[in-house]
Amino acid sequence: MNERVIAPKSRGFLFLDSHPGGCRQLVEEMWRAVPAAPAPAGGEGPVALVIGSSAGYGLAATIAGLARVGIRGIGVCFEKAPARRTGTAGWYRTAATARLARQHGRDFVFLNGDAFSDTMKEQVAGLLVERFGGRLDYLVYSVAAPRRTDPDTGTTYASVLKPIGSPYTTKTLVFDEQGAPEVKEVTTAPAEGDDIEQTVEVMGGADWERWITFLAERSLLAEGFATAALSYIGSPLTAAIYRQGTIGAAKSHLETTARALDERLGKTLGGRAVTSVNAAAVTQSSTAIPGIALYVGLLRGVLGDAMVAPIGQLVELWDQLTGARPLDLDDEGRVRLDTWELDPAVQSAVADRWSTATSDTIGELADLAWFSDEVRRLYGFSVPGVDYTAAVETEVPWPPLTS
Image 1 (cartoon, rainbow, N blue to C red):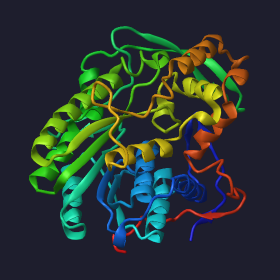
Image 2 (cartoon, helix red, strand yellow; image 1 turned 135 degrees about the horizontal axis):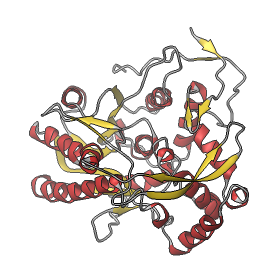
Image 3 (spheres, rainbow, N blue to C red; image 1 turned 180 degrees about the horizontal axis):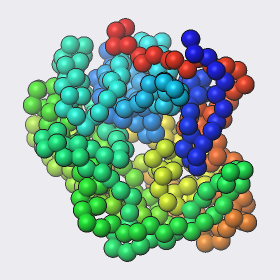
């Protein structure tokens, strides 16, 4: 037993510890937010693989799939176990998701390791054969990582967040040591050398395609197999650092990969491959991008509760993937779950607020209380119903593969 009171200590938007009870409560809250759907007969839901299952949109994909579709299958993520500090938030969220899956009769297991490696691919393939009848119906790919090692060459690539062509200066939102909000200007140097190629190797479609090929060569993809890679386009206000920057180059590669996979899967299995363009949210990945924190806070100030949370967006994606609703694709073959965010009237209102945002005015323009709570919730804090003054057990085990 290793019980202790866990206080939220942070460096910027990065928290040093996570709260197991808050992470568990958050997962339960997300599950309850999924609209009810008829459970599959005999518990035999479709078999799904979610790569990047422990955080952000990948976590939402896992919970929405379990609660809405009754998926069985495997989640893959990379989290740290409790040691001197607590486990990562994703460690505790995974334990909570596995517990809820068991309670609802879903046969869903989690593997912790490097999703880019062939070792992990082999482990997943073995489980699909041994436990799930040797067939996979759906694969959701949601990986955000700083680096990737190519299994063929052993080369390690590192992704960077940089504009392309020239330096980029933008407003950004930070909080000082007392928690007071500040709007500052930051400048990011442009990509140089092979920054673009390195970022594409990490965040583009190479590993997604490798997963599909690996499983297809072992005849593990079911007839009608469908796969979606989760992506983001975002606002013109952040385009220079995101869609037109190094990450945007990677996202473009992801979309090119989707079109090639869609043609291939259509011919071989009657299947589909799409990118799903999700809308803005506070995630551990997004808070690292200059300007995104300010943008999301202002967006919330404009929309309030009309913002669609990741769990709601992923319910919509699952409904489209499973045929409960038709696939709603744009001209580039992408599922668009971001139309509410990019509505011209919404973007105009956010742009107006952006232009006048300063440290003095930000409290009137953005929903700072919501934003601050959302950041804290990423680590299990600011979750209603949790007593943060009480000691909590931090040595939560990883969910076993056995029932």
